[in-house]
Image 1 (tube, rainbow, N blue to C red):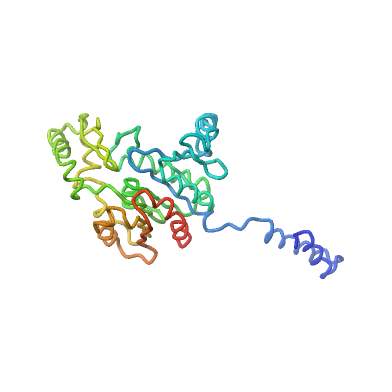
Image 2: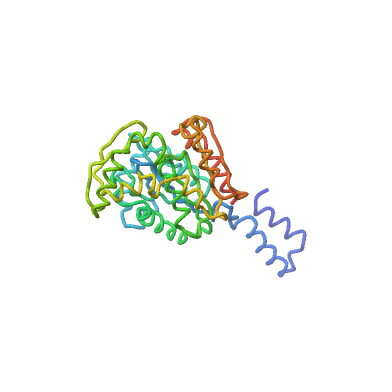
Amino acid sequence: MKIGLRIKVIFKFFGEENMNIRIFLMAFILFIFVVPNKSYSETIGVISLHPKWSMPTKHEGYWKEIGKLHIFKKKFQNKCGRGPWRCSGDKTIVGHKANDLRLVDFTLHKGGVLVESPHCAWSKLRKYDLAVDEALKQCVLPRIERLKRRGAKKIVVLGKSLGANMAIRAGVIFDGLSGIVAMAPGHVPGGEFMSSNFAGSVSKAKEAVSYDKGGDILELQDINQGVHKTLSIKASAYLSFFSPEGKAVMIKNTAKLPPELPFLWIVGSSDIITEKGIGPKIFAKAPKNPKSKYIEVQGGHGDVGENGSEKIIEWLKGL
């Protein structure tokens, strides 16, 4: 039954001569049927941290705010579905097809969650130009304030791979967050893989720092999904990301999360961090919280965006 017909039926039932009742009924009906009901998702804001060597999704609202909407439309929005660019249903978020975090951003946006996707220091363009904590302050804090301006009442930091590692660190150093989502977490300084690949670079960076040359630019090694890369990077910044005594050690940071902060670890069942039993050990270090959850979905490191987005939404709903 349409709203107009409902109003006529109710007015006829109570009598059209009673004006006070009619006014009350009109206000009540407008509230129920016209004023949108705010769901959980409209009060939740998510800061989405991209993987290493990747780039964030592009958001129309942010580009408009910084006065570059014309660039967003020309470079990204007008290319939706062409070349590498993929878009949300309303074309307000654009992401590269190689970045599977875009699937999560699209799903969150479709569900009404407020999403921010900052460009952080571990991107393919910036190449660790800041140390861990400085990088997080630079890319997360402004987005917390922006989400508050947009109406978010609860703010969650979510990340993929190294971004997940950084999301956990954000939960340690920032107050007032409502949740942390570690999606396909990666980057384990001190672990067997990183030790065998980066011991020489870590030693070289430590030597520079010991001589008070942490600001010196060195040629040091990185690897992502089997691809090696030589970085030109400050010794101190490199140590913060790659040293077992640095700021990106998940098992240490997870143990430091506030007990009141809900924590979601969502990972592929065939991801190497799962198969080697590293993930469950890291998650077990988190302080107990009834809302914290460990979830495995089908697939590997690159499949969580497709297979886990709805589970992330479901978890957010419970905050």
